[in-house]
Length: 88
Image 1 (cartoon, rainbow, N blue to C red):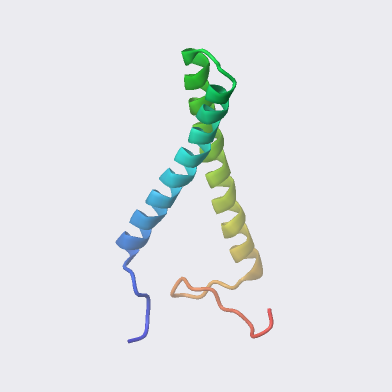
Image 2 (image 1 turned 90 degrees about the horizontal axis):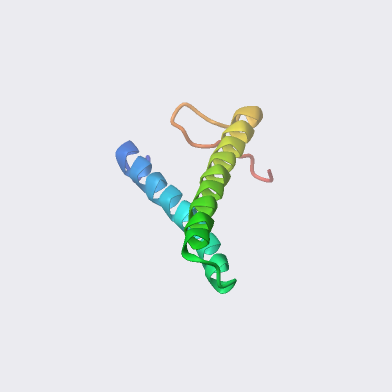
C-alpha cells in the first residue's frame, strides 16, 4: 500500500495533542520554578499562566518556521509530502 498511513483528521488530532503537550510542559515548568522559589499562590498561578503563554508562542514560532522553510525550499509536493534529494 502506498500513501499516507493516517488521515487528515488523525493528523490534525495528533498535532493538537502535540501542541497541548508543549504548552502544558512549558506552563508546568513555570509553575515548578515558582514553587521552587517558595512563591505565594498568586505568583505560582502567574508562573503557570505565563509559562503557558510562552509555550503557545513557542509552538506558533516553530510552526511558522517550518512552513516558511518548506515554502522557501519549494519541497512540498501536491500530496503534502516533502521531496528530498538523496544527499540534501
